[in-house]
Length: 187
Image 1 (spheres, rainbow, N blue to C red):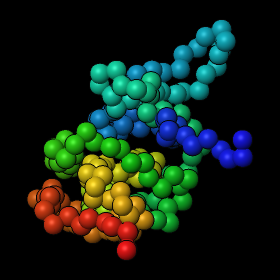
Image 2 (image 1 turned 180 degrees about the horizontal axis):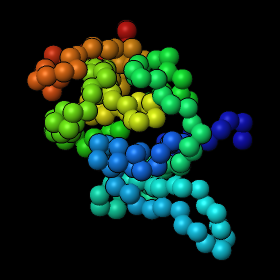
Image 3 (image 1 turned 60 degrees about the vertical axis):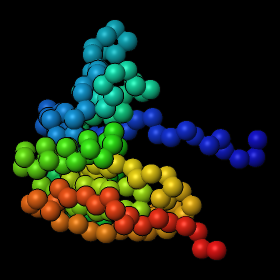
Image 4 (image 1 turned 90 degrees about the horizontal axis):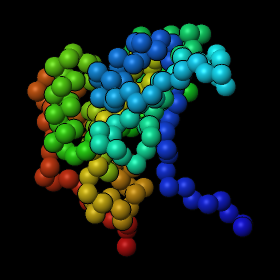
């Protein structure tokens, strides 16, 4: 074979975290994942790391887990203010796909009611997005996908489109569905 096999996608992501309990609360109470497993001491693994596994699927999805957390108390503290770029963390952000627009809007309202700081609200050419950050400085993006016909003809154009939106108040919960740009390859 002269080229690699194209993968189907990413199966799961494993994050190093400073405090497993703090991160557990974030990924369950803020993101909405549920814990599906945890490493336990066995004869084959007498001294396992503190590690937990989480899934976004509620009713037996395609994956066993979407994200795992491994405690590493030696990680440096993240900067006090999160920014989209220039953060001294290995992972810029993790995008979490919400089931649909209505679920996405409901989750934004939930986060706002919990007092979670919205770091960035954006319309991209293929998604509408909210960015927050976890206790370790990792960005977390909540998205809902726009219909394929909006972006599939010009993915590059859709990737380069960005419209910044308010991050506070009622305006941070607004989402336009009309006059959404459609991206087409130039003729």
